[in-house]
Image (cartoon, rainbow over all chains, first blue to last red; front, side, top):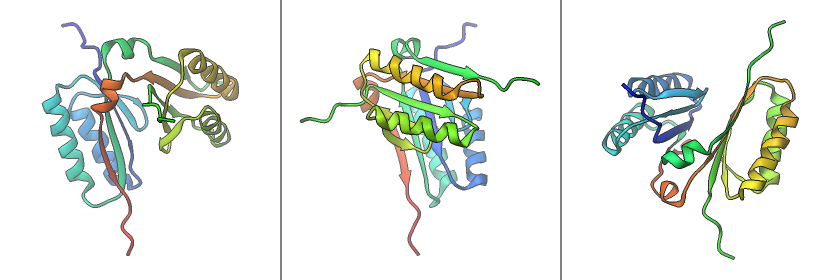
Length: 90
Length: 90
C-alpha cells in the first residue's frame, strides 16, 4: 500500500517529563512519525486530529504546555526544506 | 501596517546549546516569532527563506542537528489547532 503523504505536523513544548512521554506515545499510537524530539508528522483525517488533541488535552490535565497541530497541504509538504546532520563517528 | 499571516514554520533539534542559541537569534533577526522553545513562525519570501537556511547551515557547521522549514499556506494556518496552558500562579 502506498504510504500517505503527511497532512499535518504536531509540535509541542511540555515541561513535565512524564506528560511529555505520554503525549509522544499518543502521537505514535495514532500512527504519526517522529521527525524531531518534540515534532511529529503524519496523515490523519480531521476527526482523528480532533480525537488525538482531546486525548492530549486529557493527558496534559492542568499542567502547562503548548501543543500545535498544523495541517500541511501536499504542495507545502513537497516544498519543505530540511537540514539533517548526524553526529560523526570518531 | 497589517501584520502578515505567517507563511512558514521553522522547527529544530540542535543538541549544542551555543549553536541552538545562535540559530534562535538568526530566526529572530529574520523577523520570525517564537511559538515554542524550538519552533518559530513568520512570513518570509522564498529568497529570504533560503538565505536564512544558509545562515543556519553556516552556524551549525559540522555539528549534528535537524532543522525543518515548512511552508504553510493561509488556509492551513487558519485551520491549525492550538492547546496553550500556562503554569497556574499559586
